Image (cartoon, rainbow, N blue to C red; front, side, top):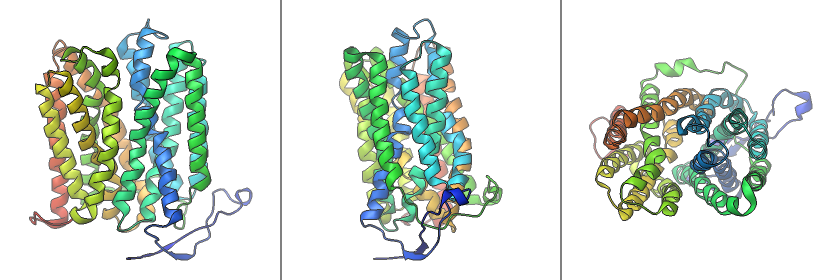
Length: 427
């Protein structure tokens, strides 16, 4: 087994220090073992309750349009969900450096409180502005506090198995995006909207509490410094990484947001099945976040990103020909699987490009700002294309498919900086 010496830590008394200071000592990077896999489980549930909850908004969109906010336009309601990923990624620029400085447990605690409060307060909402505050702001900021710890802890515990472990972690968001909508749709008709949200809140509380108890990052926290590591933007590899992530976020959400509405007008008359298409996509994404990373040690993390984006782009172009119920389900499965690697691998790629992995949280936070604006503008662009084409989805499909293929090209450019023209290089 290949091992690398890394510092571990023990938390100091917070009453005497501003952060959870850590006393370093040299230990071996375990690349497995009970403690390492507990970190995988901890991070899994953090993503379950951050991106998993954000991926659930589709069922709320439908509920609000027909019930609580029926007097508001679908476009206005969609802003509730759009603000969530924007804030998650924006908060990353702050939570990343805070994580690197040792405030990991504080971030998880604050995120847990905000996520649980969001469910409890949403159950009491009666007006649009109340939903914006409870569901957009609280979920967005809370998920932003959970996101960086979720993806930054595991890479330090694994070497050979890093990609596989990270893939398992990122599958948490897929499982959350699968289970939360199903639970909502099953409970809401039986116990009502308020108590359904409270049940979801209790689920989030239990799973986040587990993460809070077992999370234990390896390594000595960085000294106090600025929130940004601006010299990173002078590195060509980091520049290309950020550009690839930006275009990826622009292209990624279009098929997810418009999968159900497209299916209802193109071969899927069963409204009940249409409501489960996003859950099917997220379920397929679980396999997509575990299987490709399994081959990363032999193929290379950047290669996995390239092939994932290229396949997602081709599949999105094939979406144009879908005209049946079976075709819509097949597209949901295929896109979910191919896009799984797109979500699972960025942290692994970034870690492989860095000499000082202690700055991983900060660099992820900086790229998250760019990703935030990409995710915020991507959906309106797709919506404008759909509106301008009088409901014809061809423009949406071409935009998303070609954007994803461009993203694949950018990942190939990053690959070229690492291996040159060697087509079979493991990078």
